[in-house]
Amino acid sequence: MRVPYWNRLLASPAGQVMGLLRRGPMTVDELAGGLGLTGNAVRAQLAILERDGLVGQGESRRGVSKPARTYLLTAEAELMFSRAYAPVLTELLHVLDERLDAAEFDGLMHDVGRRLMADRPRPTGDLRQRAEAASALLNELGGVAQVEEHAGGYLIRGYGCPLSAATQRHPEACNAVESLLAEFAGIAVAKCCDVEARLRCCFEVGRRAVKSGADG
Image 1: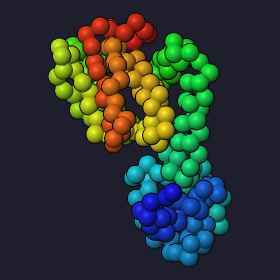
Image 2: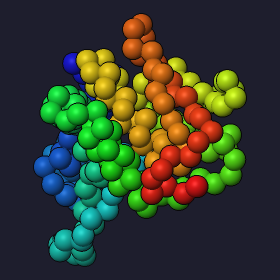
Image 3: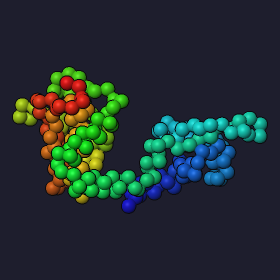
Image 4: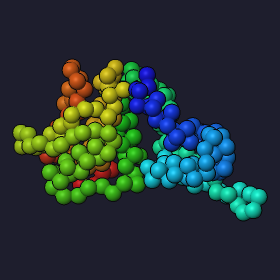
């Protein structure tokens, strides 16, 4: 169910611009005509949406006097409208976990981690520095985490879960993040997530580097 904030966003001028752009690239005049706004009002909304990475500039079209620039939604904006990703990916993980044994499932998640990190610079440094980098990555994915010292190693302790839509029903989805962080930082990572009360990420970081394609 969409929260009231989402409904308010869609009802706002910026949300209405995004709604029209879901049909395809449009010029300022086309958007203004479709929304009953002035061209300047549309340009103001487009400037905000471009700043936030939700709208980009497309190709130009022939106009009456000069070419007119078109605008289109970015991939990030399209994700905001989709209700399919979370349930589909959640069920995909659940089916994979049912059909594969533990070793195959873990190997698959490591492959996913390697591919996701293929074009991203890997962190270097000691264990603490790599743990901090892994925590920062988790936060980029929507987590709220910090690094704590623990039993000769470290914990990446979160105050929420970026995969809560999946882990709420299927805790095995944590394996994906566990493997992702291990592949990214090149360190041993073991999940210790809280799935009983409020969903909270927790990953124990050891001193033995993982045997994978990651550095170190």
